[in-house]
Image 1 (cartoon, rainbow, N blue to C red):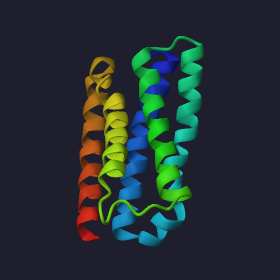
Image 2: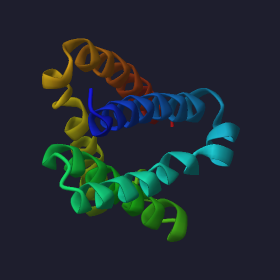
Image 3: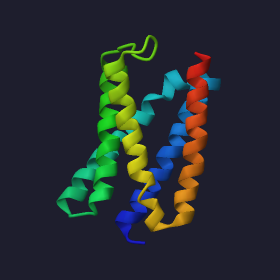
Length: 144
């Protein structure tokens, strides 16, 4: 596996584990989520750097896209959630909600789909962690 692909796989899987931990903290240990939740958005900084480096070095377009989408989602989250403190989840603010969920979902799928051609076992591992973190996320929203 070439270094770009290895970084792509590692970041994709680590981001899924990070999201799972974030959603679990939000559901079962809200004080941890409030203290450390910003770290999930902080993953956007290396993602942006990797995307820019990928553009400069002609990395595979689907890999650059995945890192770029993750960075844009994280930047949007920082702006809306941390900087402006907009309460958009409850009550739902459709424009913000659609943008946030669209960017989030696009970033997740941009990491997941290429794994099919990289390694089916990696695709399956991502799918399992994605399913678990999505379930914990949905249950967390239902509880609030």
